[in-house]
Length: 449
Image 1 (cartoon, rainbow, N blue to C red):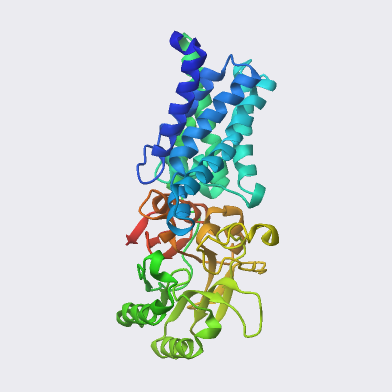
Image 2 (spheres, helix red, strand yellow):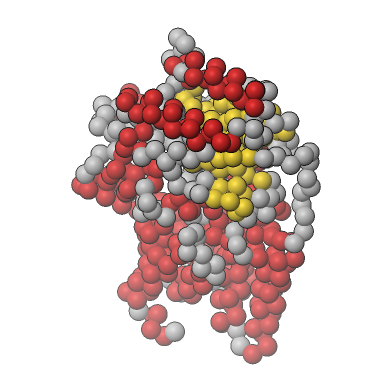
């Protein structure tokens, strides 16, 4: 590829390769794109200086996140300040910042002479890339969206999920890209030195995918997920409270008697302490029907200034799970005293939640131990796993209305599928709008809205 010796063409290729990468994720599912995309990036970075490598990685990140998380602009514009002069620059600034991660990886790779020999390439590049994904998953509260491993929920590599998780699958994808790069550079039979390990990685994943890593416990459960589809722009209007209560009661009427009924995040737009009569009625109906009903609600005790984004269980064993990983600017405002006057125009109701402190996100439901996550929490496998091994079923409730009609609900569902594949547990996922789904212990969707 002699034309790639032009610096400008290299920069353009990096941008294009990054912009194509999101097509590997839901809803598109071009599963081999991460390998091909990264192989191109590594190829054009081989002889770059550390500064040039930084620029190539940053442009790759601009393409990757600029396309893959462009839905942020929808959230900011529709449900924050409805001005393109605000939503577009904020989204661009975020993409420019998050693109520093792949930029640092490539610059560091050049500093460490990662392209000097095949052995250094195969050892350093997968490790560096996986390390940056891990750091991105917790630094500044974390943003693990578009971790490479999530793209493989329907590929052979997902067989590794119960063993090494999403980060391990990311590692194997980068390793595959490096092996492909080595195949391109080698000549004659030496290509077999790299082709055989590449084949072994993918065949081993296919073997592991067939193995049963968990076993059934207890009786089958009948479940129902209720999706109210209340538009986000109307959800928190005062006049919508009574219609929303009637809507959810009406949708639930045919499914009383199921073992478990799940309503989405903040299904009823009020504090639980404001709904005493409604919730007492719900509890009585649940007990009489033999159902456990799980609903998302803002939890606040009378006289307490703190409130929590929560899941409440009404049934034989009532309980509450309080969300532990809050979304900055959506559920709480960092540096509140400083930024609150500047961001008072943001129309985000209940935007100063408190953080739950439970050690394990579990409740007893329908005679089983359920593990819980709310919305964005299911993107953090290291937190979801805290419910294991006790939890036999996982539940995620969400309000994907924030994302509008974009690719984000599909990406979010894919993350939930990865949690099911890692834990080998069924997952019940109820959303206000977007995609509600029953996901089996292999991450396959049994039923969806």
